[in-house]
Amino acid sequence: MTTYILNGKEVDIWSEELSRYHSRSIVDYVRENLLELEERGVDPFSEIVGKEREKELLKNALLSGSSILFRGRKGYGKTTFAKTIARLLPERILAVKGCKINDDPVNPVCFSCKKKLEDGVIELEWVKPRFVRICGDPMMTTRQLIGGISLQKLREGYDLDSPEVFTPGRILKANRGIAYVDELGAVPSALQTLLHELLEEKQVTTPEGDIVPMKIDVIFVASTNPANYRGVSDIKEPLLDRMEEIEIGPPKSVEEEVEIAIKNSNSWLREAVVMPEWHARTLARVAMLARSGETRLPDRVEVEPSCRATIKVFDHVMASAVRRRHRAVMISDYGVSGVYDFSNVALGLKGRMKLELHSNLDEAVNALVNDALEITCSEVFSKMQTEVSKLASELGRRGEINAYDYREFDEILPVSEEEKASALEFMLETLVRCVGMAERVEDGVYVFSEL
Ligand SMILES: Nc1ncnc2c1ncn2[C@@H]1O[C@H](COP(=O)(O)OP(=O)(O)OP(=O)(O)O)[C@@H](O)[C@H]1O
Ligand SMILES: [Mg+2]
Image (cartoon, rainbow, N blue to C red; front, side, top):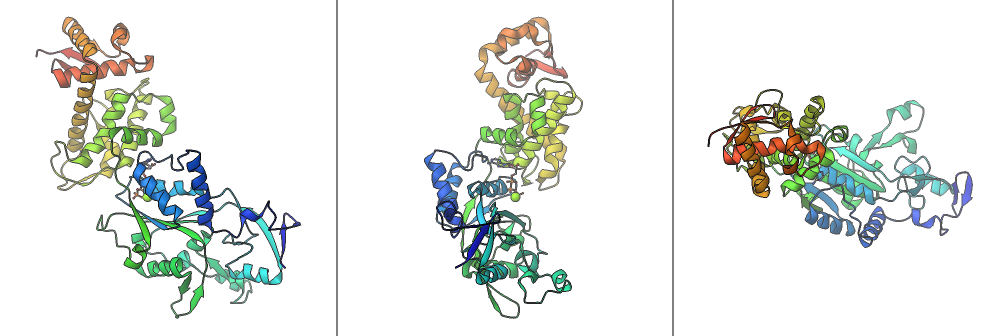
């Protein structure tokens, strides 16, 4: 009989109070939490915008205890998806006190805990199951991934075969939790073989041919870019064969792209200034147009801007609006100076996008922003025909309108007070792009031009 001690007191580990916190596989906990959330109609992956199909596939793969591989180009949410799985881990479990791999107190796997079990006394502690993120790196060593011998402990006088001498690597630290390998293809192929053996056979073979059993309990999740994408190396076939692959692609609609950008842009900026819908849709469209190829770009896009580009574009444009004391984003916030300057948009896009023939990126960004503005202006034109024609006759009568003097146009601006100048400016811009009867001459100022 083993004696279990928790907080200095002997406890019955099989009591109703404690029995559900040990001796179960991590998959069991995740499965239970997943089903419970489903029953309550709660989406466990609510941080992820859209991707309904992918969420369904992920739930099925998790219920069956499978390993998961997220495959997709950069910046569309692979890592974010993997992190949300951690939400399904139990709040706490019982582990052997001080164990580096949160060992199960009834069925321990590490040498030192096994020894404690043999000795008959195990101290317990509450731990939160870990989500261990491992960055795929071609220089990764066995010691980092699986574990190795601590020279420090040997120096301190421990024997080579004493349990303290072994230091667990990243994957072992994920025992009774989740191991997430970011960019699995970048892990050296010899280590991929070890990983495969560890997950499949629950053992590793040392370079000397010794087989070391390691019955660790992890949910294994990984991500990778598509094959041959930017020189990324491949994942070994046997490992691939044991993982469920879920494709993670770009957002499907401008609404999704906007929601992702709003959710992830800087929260201080978001509080400080309003990003009106017409600008949000325009800015979201810039990267989307570069991805789709349906635009007047001088040459083919080799590396497309991801959601990260859109998020940064939102940040830079909002930052400009805050600094210029705008209550809501204006067109001038797209750039630094000039009538149509889009350099703030370019700031978010440039490093994240590459054209095949290396043509001028500033020109490419200008073409994208102009195309995006045109699409949103035509949306405004068709949605607000009455208001836009009223504004057209006003402009004809006055010859010039400054969007910052919006007060006289209250009745045709069905928006909140903060958004009025921005809305008036965008409607004037619509007169430029869809009717051709206005010209933008400076920040917010439009003059009548003959049709
Ligand atoms: N569908 C989505 N829902 C919510 N956020 C998203 C979505 N797609 C992308 N993002 C956001 O975009 C950013 C980039 O996503 P993430 O880091 O998960 O991409 P990744 O696919 O792991 O990229 P990489 O291959 O470069 O590692 C994050 O801020 C993330 O929150
Ligand atoms: Mg990632």
